[in-house]
Length: 317
Image (cartoon, rainbow, N blue to C red; front, side, top):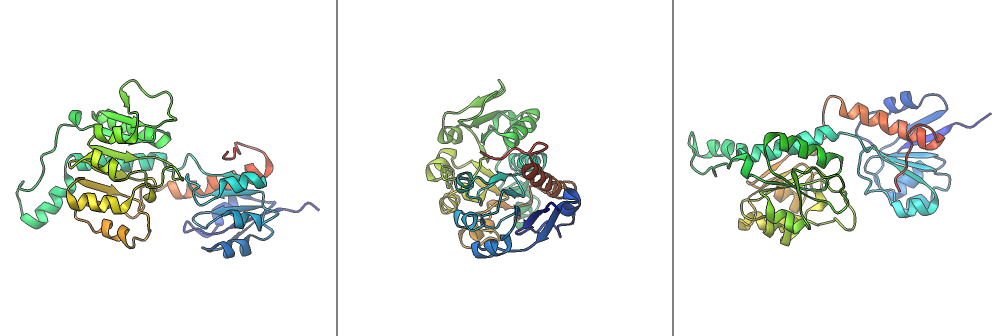
């Protein structure tokens, strides 16, 4: 009798595993856990053919201690909690859901940019503090003069650009790996150059060793006192102490942050979340009526495809 595939969900706040079980069907056994440490992942992952992971650490130590493991799939796009080098060395396939919530995150980013362009947050807060007056509200500039810079021009960055170009914003982009950039999008040679050219800087980068803290003091100073930072990607892309200092000193005007380095916010992240010139949302850019069920189903399909070698089971790397 052929042994079925053992799939372990290490952690998830997305549901009870029923969508995954239904999608995988016969021949797959799915068990769900809620673990957060290396030791716990090793413990629940013993004997597993595949791990489905949301935030749990899948480090080299974890992978080395799960000799039967063949596949790791992350719920989402980013895989910064998975040691890709170790997985490659050990012959373990890693997958993600790379077409997940693209439209939702693009909508959220474009909405944050347009809202600040029209000064909606400052106008609303100003009314609460000063009453029915335009006093204290910086006058918006026409969108044709309100340039936006996109750091990263993958699927989400391109979708944001399409929305903003339709609204009339000039769009600049910095992405060393980008190809087929539309003619009406201006390419910047560096992130600092991008920041110096625009009023809004929106982040659409993967988090890795090269991009950790990439929005630092030099980038923020280049963006300037009227600048607006938007982050719907990963909190740690921003040097948060540098951003807090820049906001307090008036070196940057505003930030719209859906992600923080510490979630729920603690320390500097909490100070940023409470700052009067920050619009913070609790990591909700991905949300829609369809996004979460689709994420679970697509992650399960990725597991099946990578284990069986069928479908569109492309592994990362």
